[in-house]
Amino acid sequence: MNAENIKNEAYQLIDKYFMPAKAIIVKDFLNTYGFWDAPASTKYHGNYPGGLAEHSLAVAKNLLMLTEKLGLKWDNPGSPFVVGLLHDVCKMDQYKLISTENGYQYVYTNDSIYSHHGEKSICMLANCVTLTQEEIACIRWHMGAYETDTNEWKYYGNAIAKYPNVLWTHTADMMASHIEGV
Image 1 (cartoon, rainbow, N blue to C red):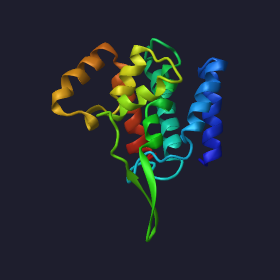
Image 2 (tube, one colour; image 1 turned 135 degrees about the horizontal axis):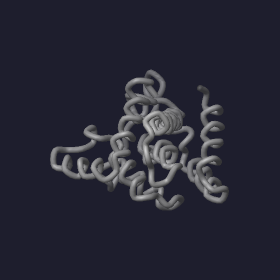
Image 3 (cartoon, one colour; image 1 turned 90 degrees about the vertical axis):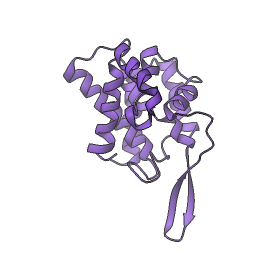
């Protein structure tokens, strides 16, 4: 899917799942901070310009599909889209493009004040959307075991026990990155 199609589809879904005034704010936030051009990683899934938007839209669509097929219940019916699209907004400024002998390459900038990228996404989103507690838990723990050291397994388990959709968010993320490759 090309970048313009991804942006158009995301805009349509933003208009569907956010009130009109909030949709304008979310679109402006994503446009201002480079969501549509950022990569999703430096060397794994979506490691190209626009990879973040493509990955995020895929996660949102997977989470919407899982919600429908499995009859998942959410505090806010729009949460699968909100969580899926916005779970990785922290990556808008996480990678820098550098020139190399072979063209270009993204490198990770290790200057964050947050220990987990889900936390950074939540903090960045505080400026434009009000998240439910369930959405916060899903975004914070969307990496599951991939970003959890053994001292935090208890908290991850607590999050799943309180909000089972934490596990489904991680599943949707893994479907997009490991099965679909975006």
